[in-house]
Length: 302
Image 1 (tube, rainbow, N blue to C red):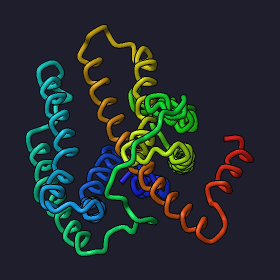
Image 2: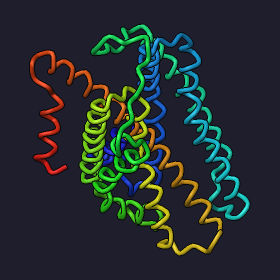
Image 3: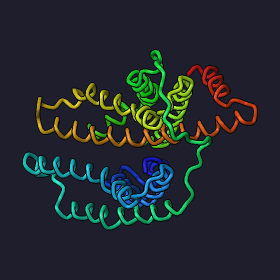
Image 4: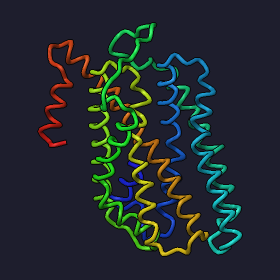
């Protein structure tokens, strides 16, 4: 959704000078991308030997949009009480609910139907039925430390552009450089992929096989820095202490940070899975792919 929205804005289809066009395009792209979410979630769930794919599909189509919708309703209720001129009408809310339940959710189930009919993602090695114990490790085995370190570099790659985005978002200024934003977004994705692969390599060297959730949270850790940056940036809007503006600001920044966590976490998870598959494949061919990757990272001063 983010890639398509930024790309369309970069080529001029979503022009910020047309009021509401960017937000409308973002909502519509997210709605129709439900088919891809259902496909990927169902196929991944099947790869984990899950049997209740209907429940998994329902969670995919309901949890994150439901949380967003609930936050939106609460913030909109606050606006109705204190700033009625900024209140979103009941008709618009009904349209959003219709797009969610009558368009996005059915598309999620359609995508899940095709995803569950596909073959599972192939694992590069045989899975042992007996879970091995994980030996004690040093600082590189500290999950909390890795979580904090993994998010710093991706956040640093978008730090400068983030200031202009925040200024445009909260200080009523236009944002035009979507082409540059697409470049920055691509750099952030590449950085997350590289760091998660590098952390996974050291994690596997330490004989730690519990990498699935760790790779996901490592990729999403950038969102923690994003929300921390929003706390630092808050005085720029010159809002009164504990005002409605404060509630709206932190409410929407929490939503944005949560979406960033899920997006970058997915990037970290699938890039780590790709890294393992290629590492084993190259290793079986006589070349250890991980060694080449780490040498490349060292050359790039990462």
